[in-house]
Image 1: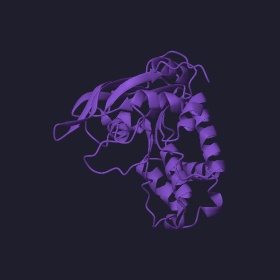
Image 2: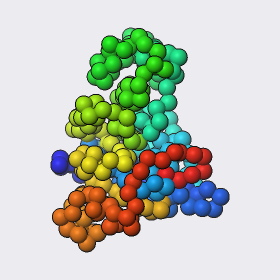
Image 3: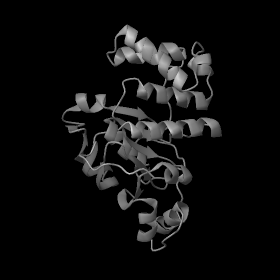
Length: 263
């Protein structure tokens, strides 16, 4: 695992809380992620992972606490904070009546990029994601894996310094998943702070410099996979064994994200 250099956090969560009708989904979450660090954010179904990610990206207002991205409060100073973030949601959100190339041009325009810069960056990302042969096909005709690649390309258009990846390898075949994992490592080496959620524990164990385990809205353990195993009282255990021990035999699982429901 890579060694990251101590520095000011790129992502800072302070006492972050979200409640729905008085029911706490996220409770007093404190977390810091440094530039160049890959942080695996794990938890069983309903733990509050996606709720936290949506608060981090500015899609869901917290009940209390704050999210700071590169020194900017997401809710008090959203412009600079959001410009620093690339977000890949668990379900790709794409304009499916555009071609892949047209959609990237459209998004580049929304980011305020010049026409020439947007087109050049679109071609670079289509090639990076292996989508150049499909660049002029309508997105509605893409497979789930291709749509996920499009979501990743969109998140990278403006060269963000923070990446929030929610189940980013879901729907990808083995080769595509390997390519995305290699890209995540490359982004981190370039100094990008990465937070990823995944229900595939082997992906988290393989990629993460640190792992945070959220359970019933609370961060119950944090550190390397070895640190978590020691906290669970089973030194040397793999991440699945550690996860089961710390969460009371609840394994992570994909789930539907519905309004007012914690993930």
